[in-house]
Image (cartoon, rainbow, N blue to C red; front, side, top):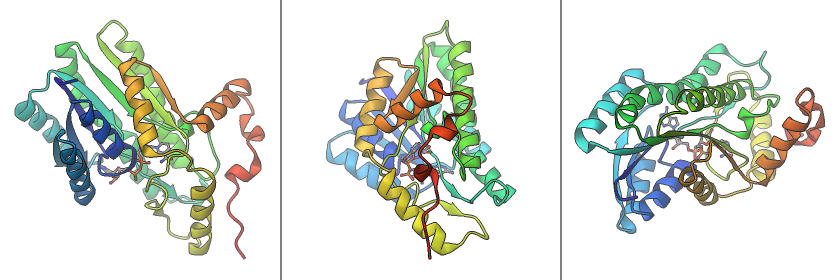
Length: 275
Ligand SMILES: NC(=O)c1ccc[n+]([C@@H]2O[C@H](COP(=O)([O-])OP(=O)(O)OC[C@H]3O[C@@H](n4cnc5c(N)ncnc54)[C@H](O)[C@@H]3O)[C@@H](O)[C@H]2O)c1
């Protein structure tokens, strides 16, 4: 992987950080970006500790101009010949039902979780086409395969990432560019604890929901997720499911496409009890 540049967004924490470390350990060159400079520095230190190749750049994937500038800088400074673009940066939102969700929060999430992926791809795909090689790896979720209550913005964005990726797979079928959509189940990262909380949400309920979600749903480690993603990329897999939970839920959706949401155990999506 000596000549491969992994361009990873959201690489300052969780899955993105673990993938940066793993890819660098396999001798890939890692261009890591994140909005969180402290997290990025931690990633850089961890990669340097194993003598890996890494450069870090602050990048907010909800900023269209910053993405254009970033892509131009990457081309000029690194002249990458083989790109693996990992659109991983993402956020969560604690906003209750769709009716309770303020539109500005919905749009905030879409700008990062969906438009971030689309804009990064728009910026890098022309270069990949010129070279006729590379991988686009878009991190969706199992919530990009199944709709879940209280997750209207997140599911909309993640279904969007899947739809966008499927179109790219089709359009790039005769090229040497592989496209993968990644669908993790619950992974123990900071995403839930860093979630934005919408105005009007009850703080006690939010804290109890977080505790329940972290205890019941976040099962696998980011290192495990990174291994599955890397293997998936190397095999050129078009769909990468991570964890037994994601695989079971995917089967459930395919078996009961019209009413899978009635088959999901109620306790799984129920809000935590608070007194
Ligand atoms: N953890 C899970 O259970 C899980 C499950 C399914 C999908 N995912 C997806 O995996 C991806 C990685 O999430 P994670 O679980 O590692 O979370 P995480 O919070 O540990 O990492 C996400 C990273 O994205 C960065 N980020 C947030 N907003 C950004 C922005 N505007 N620009 C650039 N970077 C930004 C954060 O600073 C953070 O470092 C996300 O797309 C998430 O939706 C996570």
